[in-house]
Amino acid sequence: QVQFMQSGAEVKEPGSSMRVSCKASGDSFSTTAISWVRQAPGQGLEWMGGIIPVFGSPIYAKKFQGRVMIIADESTSTAHMDLSSLRFDDTAVYYCARATAVAGLDWALFDSWGQGTLVTVSS
Amino acid sequence: EIVLTQSPATLSVSPGESATLSCRATQSVRSNLAWYQWKPGQAPRLLIYGASIRATDIPARFSGSGSGTEFTLTISSLQSEDFAVYFCQQYNNWPRTFGQGTKMEIK
Image 1 (tube, rainbow over the protein chains, first blue to last red):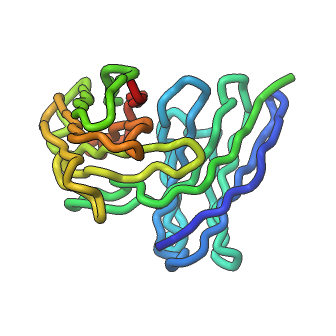
Image 2: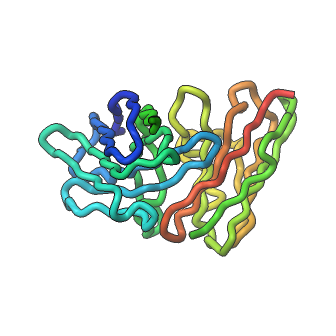
Image 3: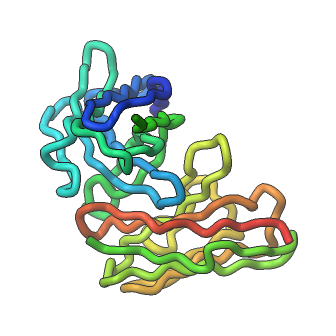
């Protein structure tokens, strides 16, 4: 089973960029599908995108394309999620999570989660 | 994108009773729906996938049903550790989407 440890809380100004990191231990990092999911205050969870390190090419939800970048560093077993042009409504807890496939569908289920990283966008 | 609407938002139930939670999708997701349990300070826990298949080590008092756009999670004989937030998630379409959650509290 993979375990994730995420970077600490941050406060960012509108218009700036943020990076949340997610260090994996346990299972093989290279073949783990790592998703990023966020939860804004009072809202449900929102899938942002993901990456399988051995393949390198991330996938993104259309909503975030152009503003998000997900990368994986196999040397440190760490995934990073960068979000740019921050807005007040990007204030959220950001989670990394392992996605598994089921019934031939990739990125289907989320069975291991990081502890979450609170990012507050405030002026 | 597919919107999942859960009801009720909050459910007050006494220990030992049963609870029924609902998740409705704006279009068919076939049986590609999962349920999770989320307790404060813990990671979400996968309960059900394929609408009705219990995940590993999930007690039999948790059961899921439904297909298409209407889904139900039933928890029979509620125990103290079952009071939590429950949310559904579809994996039939992109992007994967989640419901807002139902908070189950002790009556």
